[in-house]
Image (cartoon, rainbow, N blue to C red; front, side):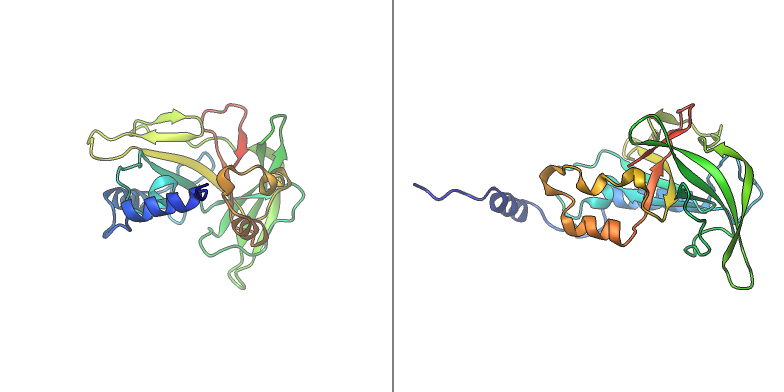
Length: 242
């Protein structure tokens, strides 16, 4: 009987023989970098931000196929540019968790902190405004005041000069130039602490063994960033984790 072939070895051999590392940045990667630069140079319009605040910033992250494809396949598999976008004036924490006294350098000196509140839908939560952090000029630590009245975080105001298509939590921008990919942007909020609502994520069934246990350990134990996506057309202001 012939030896059974290891499927993973066949796939590896196929990829090595038919694909290569890109010899130069791809046109899609360049477009994604340009879009990020334009966003970073502007601001994220939100209902609670002061339009004259020059320190407010948009922080975009490239995700999806443009960020993850490190090889040049026989056929292109990039259909759009996926971006995650958050404001440096917002932070999310689990309910009951004390507000932080120190934050990464990219945060604003005034930060609105929202608590994660359970909702009636699995995987969805409310983000309720709870604290305002102000940075001290003496030691760069943050002090906080608690809001008297809770408010739920809703979607951003739309710029009337731009035509956007809303698809679930994403806002899709299409270009007249057919050589440019559409941009699929999801507004997110940054969370520096692993919330209980996502406690089952490391043990969920993973297709094809990805992410592996080492990656899961880094995400959970090293407290990597967690992002809560904001559904722009969700009138109840429920937000989805993961």
